[in-house]
Image (cartoon, rainbow, N blue to C red; front, side, top):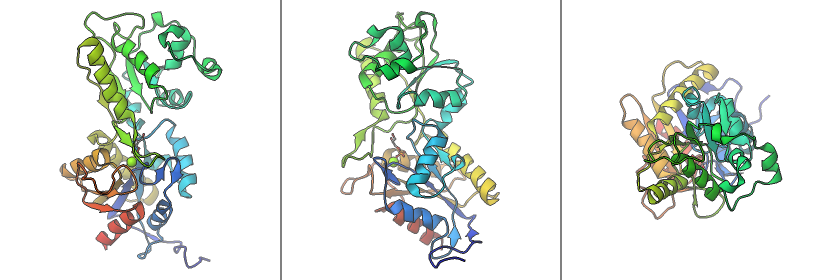
Length: 346
Ligand code: G3P
Ligand code: MG
């Protein structure tokens, strides 16, 4: 028995098109769901005028928790099930680097969360800033570990440890002390704390899980994000050493992230809907011109991809400004974005 508002059980699934969603500023803002997102998801799940289901995935630059944990949270917020099989966050592609680097510094996020994420990706030896402060509390003159942090941090002798790479997994909760520690490593001989390189050219590489300078949180205006930490670190390195620092960012708008998303969508459509052929069009709904729209448009320009960018007005992009990267469509909310895609198809 189905009520008039719920779709028939054997709803048809389209293999012609699919959706991909950014999260912050599109579905969620400051930890709260954007109300239209719930209706938008219902439409994708078959409650639309054509009674058709549309496959979809989520591609966020955010992170700081395991994919599994993020999906549980998102499922509660959107009031439907979200599976890790349809979800990528900023640090997801970093798991491919666990084979390359053994001892790594992982920066950002709440408590021990990012250490857990990195170990889950297979990184063998994960160091946090807390471990370094625990070994030598003079490292950060204005930051003392809380008793909780002290308990969770691992005691080791960093004079004997070589840190091979630095990964910023999520937003730093303490820029000054995290930057001090990153800078110490960048200026060291081969990632050994307490040493200083003569050339400042043999420190470990630095990877950021994304490059968003600003993002959309609960404040009315945008807030600075990980990309801001990145420019700050590069400027500081230059000021202190006189040298240029080259760092690497994952996430949107990197083409690698869109390729990763394409493989995820292919797998998801195959596993859950039995669809083998690629979709004709993927609609990407985002709020940040520099990452969502830029990445979608550049990916669309590559041969055989057909991605269509839709910008919403619920996040970073503000009406009255000119987006640096021009979307195929601009709409008020994610619900209108879904309706726009559906109407364009039928
Ligand atoms: O820190 C997360 C933020 O920069 C962007 O997240 O979901 O808008 O890609 P999202
Ligand atoms: Mg966003």
